[in-house]
Image (cartoon, rainbow, N blue to C red):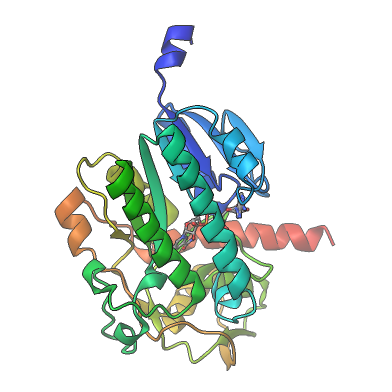
Length: 333
Ligand code: NAD
């Protein structure tokens, strides 16, 4: 490519590029011919980043943020956060770190952005911001965007996300940044954390099923009757890219699936994919709200899009990937 064509390329900064969604986002932007700078505490453990530049650094540190923001980008995606599944965010043991680490990253980035100017910045909030009192009935949870207040998230992770949403909105109002905010609902897929304590339920269930012998059993936290919806990574990125290209709309908007299932049903689906018949042993463990589902009314209205992939199709791809990791780990022992 000649220098002029190179110059015309759109540029993106992806913070959290070594993580699950960030890694996939880099691949997507690369396909769209962006020039990309990635930044993270670490590289992805599963595949080589396709970013043109990758900076290893801690975004809680202002000097790292300065280095990362030494030029203007067409688009910034601030995905870096201290996050994990129920075993990480609901035990209470990590609360102070979760709040401090993620809020510091967001404050640093916006403070510097105010000085250098952001053309467009994306922030991923979470379904965890929705009030616990609207999610007590597993068959009828309420997660429309306008139901966020009066606020009562069920975790400090959710409170930090809500604070940071407001922070991005305030910078949008006061400093004119073009801000886009999505509330992700349980994103899953290959190359997501699948063990170690930060994994989320689809990955944990896939791992347990892959490790179990046919006719055996898997453990599950709680009675499995709580409901959730899960969105496959490719569709999450479809939503993010469309949101980024929708003028005059900031959000927050849900990016999630409306296909709600119980965790027991989720486990049965995985067993069917694995062709294994397993018992579920319900044990005590950290749990979130009783019911949660995306409400896609606003995203349909505002960006004329919603996900369509059936859960079982995304699960199939994820299970096959996790099964491979389990086999690799076994054979390296
Ligand atoms: P992830 O943990 O795989 O990715 C986050 C990345 O941020 C990690 O690679 C981590 O190393 C990096 N990071 C953390 N602290 C950092 C620091 N101080 N400096 C530099 N990098 C740092 O998580 P993910 O699932 O890819 O999530 C990406 C974003 O989407 C997060 O903001 C998360 O809160 C949000 N989100 C995800 C989901 C989901 O279901 N995966 C749901 C709601 C919101």
